[in-house]
Image 1 (cartoon, one colour):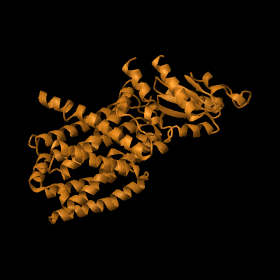
Image 2 (image 1 turned 180 degrees about the vertical axis):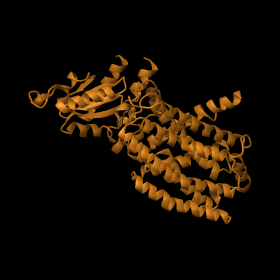
Image 3 (image 1 turned 90 degrees about the horizontal axis):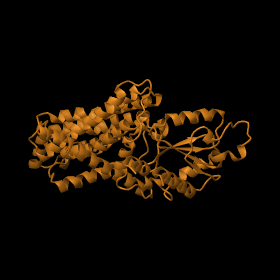
Image 4 (image 1 turned 135 degrees about the vertical axis):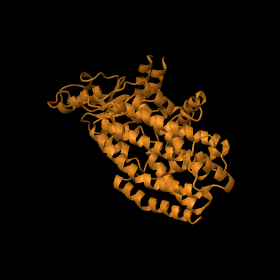
Length: 140
Length: 304
């Protein structure tokens, strides 16, 4: 493992891309930065601009409008950019599968690295997912 | 000549001050985390961030001008020069030229100017909002900052060389021991907070409202350069204030102690205040802070 990958796994800056979610997953993501879970221990911080991001956190089902925005966000992020799909909607559209407002899943728009299912997933589950993501980057 | 280059690149210059500044940035993050009842990042976090940013792709917006990529390097070079002048002045006070204090004052504005130039060159609307706020902030804090430094110059019998100001304090006691010194020091601490871009004066890169503002289009190496500038300023500004106001005893141990005291003051101001709007910041600097600094100048003229 070279220095570049190691530094990437130790300081993951995440950008929160909300693709028309119901806000439950977003609230649980905010829990990750509270004293009980505190992912800044591992160098993970939320950033405001997608240009600073190492990982996109996608929540919700893409609609016709947010699909284009999501594609744009991914192309604007500097590579290597990882993508985490959080919640049942982002993983596989669950009950919006046949909805007329939802054209596709998240992984049909951009490549997804880690899926964290749940409605919403617990913060512990998200931390476990991030650990899986880091192991994947390390090549384990 | 070789010694000067080594001075610039290694000892009081780039390498040394960047390491101290990044470590101080870690102290800031750790103390902030402890205040919020969190654990906080490990000590090497800021170094890791910089290394990671060096390995990322650098994206240049389609319409950006050349200054977009030049300005980060300009700001780092200017602050490293300040760190070198300060470090050399503390080690051997008579090495530098007369008037280096004025050069330092000019060079300390360069990071803000570089930020404004880079943000304007990126052609992002959020960046232009951030640039205009940064410009107003510079206009706001420069007046009281220069007034408080004028106080120091008056008190040390008109010396405009950092070395001779230090000599004066070594023979006649710190400027902080007098009333005008204390007033000017308080004004300078507020200006330092604004120069560092910390809360409550972080309107230019307000993360929650204009998404990192001036830095919004930067990624990879240029962003790392701006982060390094922040770290270097976190080392340079407190050391400048210490050598101007509190420079009676500058043995290494005393210098470290004084630096930590100033760092704690900065972190406490940062963690106990909400962000000011730009008009509030302007009113604050041109009102109470300028009044304090001006009264310090008047008191210094009367020898208090």
